[in-house]
Amino acid sequence: MKPSREPIHGQWSSRWAFVLAATGSAVGLGNIWKFPYITGENGGGAFVLLYLVCIVLIGIPIMMAEIMLGRRGRRSPINTMRHLAQEEGRHGWWRYLGWLGILSGFLILSYYSVIAGWALAYLVRTAGGVFTGLTADGVNNIFYSLVADPERLLAWHTVFMVMTMVVVARGVRSGLERAVRYLMPLLLLLLLVLVGYAMNTGAFQQSLVFLFSPDFSKLTPNSVLIAMGHAFFTLSLGMGAIMVYGSYLPRHVSITHATFTIAGADTLVALLAGMAIFPIVFANGLTPAAGPGLIFQTLPIAFGRMPGGEFFGALFFLLLIFAAWTSAISLVEPLVAYMVENMRMSRVMASALAGGVTWVLGLGTIFSFNLWSGERYKLWGLTFFDVLDYLTVNIMLPLGGLLIAVFAVWAMRRESSISELGIGDGPVYRSWRFVTRYITPVAVLLIFLHAIGVLKPWLNRL
Ligand code: TRP
Image (cartoon, rainbow, N blue to C red; front, top):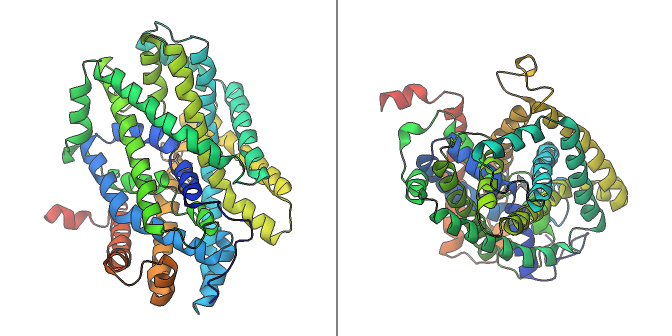
């Protein structure tokens, strides 16, 4: 055991630098683009409640475990898992957990970048006043003409990929800290402006009922799995992103405080996004279940009508792009850190290579909305993008997270986790250990079993 192990890639300058970077990773398209549309597709309140329960019982304990493993290992996730397994006298196979994470991050980034590209396209459109005075139909048409055009999507996807890889090539810490410190609070403020607008649409009350009054009959069999998958996705858990960031964390920082701050900020942003978007949905007679285009089909209506809408709209999409950017960076960081450590590559080379391959895979998502949107190209009625999203978010991340939890509380010695978390053997440590040992893994397993229909006969008997 070498508690004084220094990280290879440098360290965060302070506790705040870590919290900001991790919040930058957590807050992204997941909160503003994805949370509202999956909430809409899964019937509202009951889904939101499930999601919050998953954040508390699964997300928070696993985030603590992931940061803890990262800081103890001080390396990219693969090497961290290998070293920790060795140190704890466990099987070398644990390193494949690192590989699973790298694969998930790569697959997610390939479509994440395409969606972030939509936000780039919308930045240009709102700034240019395209939406001024448009009806819901007009706004809809603009969305469909964008996604129907593979060339435009490809151009924006390319821009976003290049932006991401430039930052990654220069090292995650330079620039990122400052960007997050000022832009995150600004994003929060702008969301409040939007919620303020939404309060005057006449459908605010209805939206609050939709979002916060649970009606369990609206859930589909898959909703529970989607809520859990989203808890992992929105907190950036289960693939080593937070582990890598934790590996740059100075020793004296409290992992518990950091975790609650990050999870709190992330949840707040998601709920505000929901409260901004659904009033516009209901006030304009749109359907909450519109799918991945939801924010792009609703928010521009508000921007087109509010005074100063061009300014607010452009600012909103700019901030959304920043939020997506700081998240995308964390999706490739484990891979790039590994290439630098084990393949003796420069950061620039590693970033170019990783970015290039991800860019190519992104074509599959682009085509899912146009060339490959026909039945002929679908698998079980799902497009390439749908399959990729389902597989990564609902299966790979929870699986990775489950294994991280199992390693942290079953494979790792008690003394090791006590010393690394640094909160002594008190009530906080004991409750974390209890929840992570018994509740988190059982919850994840039950949700998996539920999704594949194994629990159905039992549930029917209740
Ligand atoms: N959490 C980010 C969002 O909500 C996406 C993200 C960044 C992510 N890094 C990740 C998701 C790692 C899973 C794993 O937009």
